[in-house]
Length: 239
Image (tube, rainbow, N blue to C red; front, side):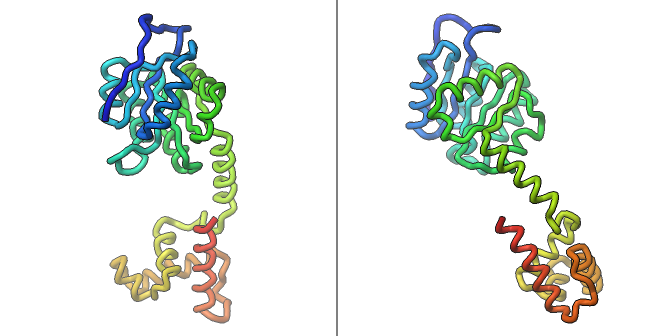
């Protein structure tokens, strides 16, 4: 909840050190970042924050060129770091955001970049052991570039490849919803009641799901098709 400031007497301008605000809830990581970056002439730490309120206050008082932030903070619902990046895109488009996370989650990376990839970066926290990599990422973001951790790129590529070859890719959102209920063992009648649909409408959706998953009506047992469809769904969730 505190805000510590570390300022030099000179104000950095273009070509000078990159001004950075650190937002991190872990005391040890805050101190590690401050120790690592505080004595390097390429960056200037103008504030170190332990929560989102002080981060926003620090940005308003002295807008930095880059915000170095944790993806989650105390008392926040979900990845508040990503929401901060989105807000800054609207309110301070010239401020870069480098997100540090222990999660190699492609969904987080895509959310970070969905409003534009320039001046945005996503690195795993293990990178903070390497001063050179971290400062290079900060400088790249300050130049208007984007930076993604190699492990995140790998996960994104595998996720995209999986999605492109997934038998579930052709299903509509409603069919995805019904298939999830089939995988839970619900009957057509129970599904109809849950979704406020007629039983006939559910049957049409289910037959469409079977067709798209390559489970033709000639299958000898209807129950077998439901089991196979459920297995396809569950196998995709486990990957």
